[in-house]
Amino acid sequence: MFVALAPFYVILVTLLVVMLVVSFYRNHFITALLSFAGTGLAFTTLLNHCNCLPYWAQEMIVTDGTSNMMIGVSLLITLVLIITGYNYLQQIPDKKEEYYLLLLSSLLGAMVMIASRNFVTFFLGLELLSVPLYAMIAYQRTQRQSVEAGIKYLLLAGASTATLVFGLALMYGASGTMDLYTFAMYLSQLQHMPSFVLAGIGLFLGSIAFKLALAPFHVWTPDVYQGAPAPVAAYLASVGKAGAFVFLLRLLQESNIPSHTAIFYILAFLSIASMLLGNLLALGQRNVKRILAFSSIAHMGYLIIALLAGGNNGYQAGMFYLIVYMISSAGAFATIALMTHNQNEPAEIQDYAHLYQRSPLLAIVFAASVFSLAGMPLTAGFISKIYLALAGAGAALWTLVILLVINSGIGLYYYTRMVTGVFKTYETAEKIRIPILSGLAMAVILLTIVWLGVAPGGFLYWLVP
Figure 1 (cartoon, helix red, strand yellow):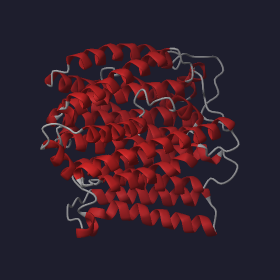
Figure 2 (figure 1 turned 45 degrees about the vertical axis):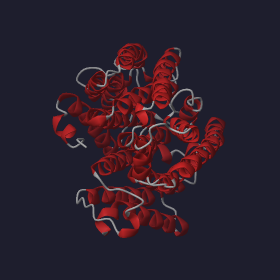
Figure 3 (figure 1 turned 180 degrees about the horizontal axis):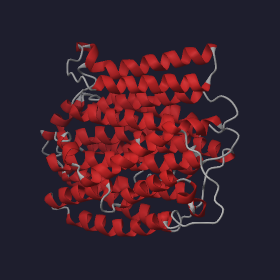
Figure 4 (figure 1 turned 90 degrees about the vertical axis):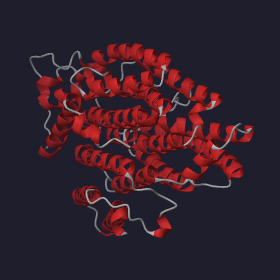
């Protein structure tokens, strides 16, 4: 029984140990090392997979292949962010150690969300994920932009949480259950969906749309991504989105919600609006983090196609696309973190000029990550977009598939603009020193992007529901 919950226990124990260490002896290296070791140990426990949940947890979480895969990816990305964010945090004058407490707390919340089979468990995981993020976003408290981003996210997320609770109350009042699968069965037996059930599902979807930064609930995204420290933006763009998407995927896979006309059009509207607004608003941006923020809106719009497609193809395409997006975003933001000097992040596109001359590894990883987000051939992003388009075509979602192709072409413009100056040479270019572990972590991201873009078959095998 311990084996099934081992990753959760390990992260919780690591969190408590780090808390005690910080209380009695402040040392950034030791705190980072403990956080890295605990996260790595949590990942190794996933390798000994077991569905033998204790009785008290069987109605709360599920440890199937979906949850184990996404928890594993989230843990690995967190490991990369701990390594690449260490030097970034070294530049902060004091209070570096508390960052790892917040990160581990938020990671535990993300894991709970991913494994949730109960709306209450999902809500608790969501709050455990979100509350530390408010402080992480505003962690550079001496910088006005960072504090402003944290406050903005706090206020809007609070309103989103209230909307979620109201929606859950309506859903519970109709079905009498908070269990995801029982609620899905209840919906499947309805011939006509009552208006208050439809309202509850609409409020629930609106709150999830906020967490995923789907248009028109996206207004916080560019300012928060720009103001947040680069490692935090990387976490928010990757691990921060996994739990909400996986839970929504479970709900839609198990119920007939997408077949209901009103819900279908709501989801289709969110997809179309996100694709168009995300890509069009990114065209006029010069700040790299804002470009990545707007592009994340578009990518979440693409993911809705997998939810509407449904079936095994929709499940596999959605999971694969989400994982590829998480890895590619982590690579792009990790590059920003490693380029940061004296708390000055490279903000504008021109700041990345001559990057290859300064650090060939960072230049190649940054270009590979950006091209993967663009869906260029020989990258993981290309294969994931192909699978997504095929899933949409298989479900006859032709309008969404055509918009996917068109918007991918629009995105190619600003993605290409981001890397045009990276490989140019200059007479005097200051070298960027990368720690060995950070270099290895970036190399792993690069190899993963290429591997999933050239030979993804073995990995896709594990994504069969």
